Image (tube, rainbow, N blue to C red; front, side, top):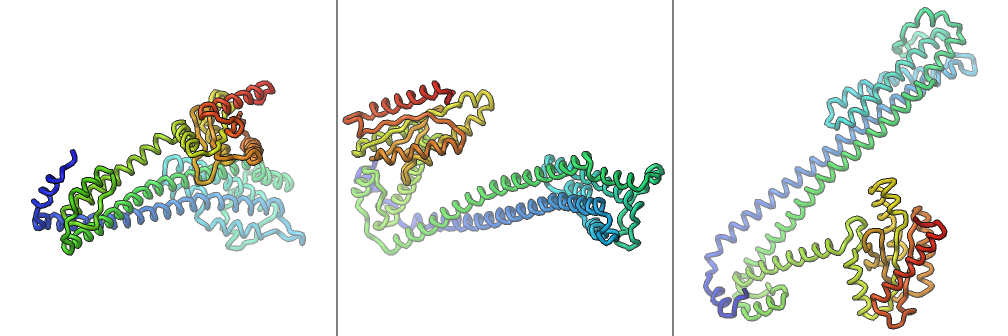
Length: 459
């Protein structure tokens, strides 16, 4: 219940200032501790976010190095096997030296897989790396075998770099091969189907692992960022509270003019924010508290209104918002143009590809309609429910509408979607009510859909 003037005056005059001095001090202490806590929390979460990003970057680099190392070994060994002799008739040592140099790098398959076992990554990531490492090791063994065959035909120079290549012993049968057969066998080892499959497996698994690592990193960072954002908002609220309390305290000290209770009661009755410029502390405290509640109430009303008027799938205003917008625009005296839309193939898409694909179709349709008929600064495109959409134009011209429709048809082709449409102009239906305008646009839309049915252009 609202207080009467006498009750308000009695309350204002019955509370000495010294009785609330201690609560003010305690509140300052609490806010100070809260600010310190929030600063520490923000710093902690920021460091954790940075560490997560750094670790994920290291993991991604390690996974990418596995592919790079495998690719380099493959390219250099294949380069020698395909061209063992230069144009001058000398043995082509350049790719062999590059191969030996790459062997010194700690980024081959099994070594990377062993490191991933110690990383804080998901089982899925480790599975990708284990498979890629296995294929990379299989490629490595094939390369060494092929190089051993080539070495029996084109002996390597006895230098430390090439001696470090751990060539396996050839079987007696292989040693007995003619030179051409040895070369052919070597090329088969690094150019054959099994080698190509292993090479593709390494590429696919590393790419999948990197993509998954980035996804996991983004999810972790996003979760941490939400916390940081919440802490920052709370920090701003705490700082604002501290500043407000300081202003409030100095106002009590330096200002002794009592704001009339009748004015406060009047402002509350009018549902307006209370004036906090004048008045002793008791009145201002009530005003600040009330204004805070009023602000929170207005914020909550705004949130609830947005939730009630927004379609969660497409982000467009819903049927309720459509009715409100249409009526308000009509009452403001605009000559309206109304377009009604019906998305084709939705049921077929849901039945054949699943509801996730159907949802994507609806989102694409919403984007197409908004892009072609949306007005800057206005929420004039709506999802009415199911596969039905609408757009409301204020004072449209026929030329402008025709241009928008041409763009709409092109946009449909670009997105590979099909939408039936129909429109009605208030300028063509003189004196028509809002309902009549809706019925006219709806009728033309279904006529258009019927035509598309007849030509097989819609489901």
